[in-house]
Amino acid sequence: MKIAAYAALGLFGALPSSASQIKSANRAANASSPLHAQVVCERAGVVGRVRCDVEAQVDGARITWGDAQILDCPPFAFPLKGRIGPDDAAVRTPERWRWAFGLVAKDVGSGSISVRVRAVVCVGDACSATSVTVAAPLVVGS
Image 1 (cartoon, one colour):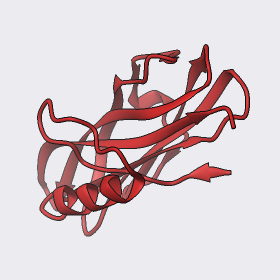
Image 2: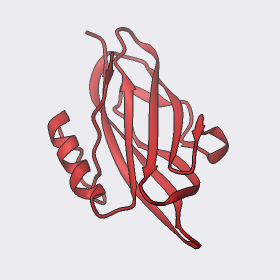
Image 3: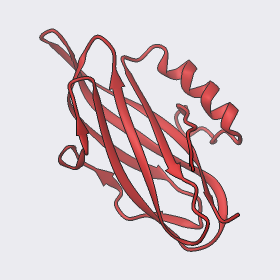
């Protein structure tokens, strides 16, 4: 089962503590940006590898470049890569890019992971760089 919760974060702000706070913060911050993003991590029953997906989407525009940077993980887990580049995108359409990445959980626990999604977004011939930071719960164990 995947837990779908995400949020935009302020600069160096504390991570929201609940899924409802994460969703609420994400809607508020993404409302003014052409770039919308979300991160989803599988709920893992045991320690080991955990799969996460991050997706960037735009409406009425197109993404010409994008990447994802893992900014923060709980102390019981660490990312296999710190940055997932444009060539690693599993889905790459003009309106939506999606990347998959792995974490290694060395202990059971729960916390939040935060990811910055950066993209070059174009409307017609006008392009601009933008980014959004999103978060999701990470749960390992029962």
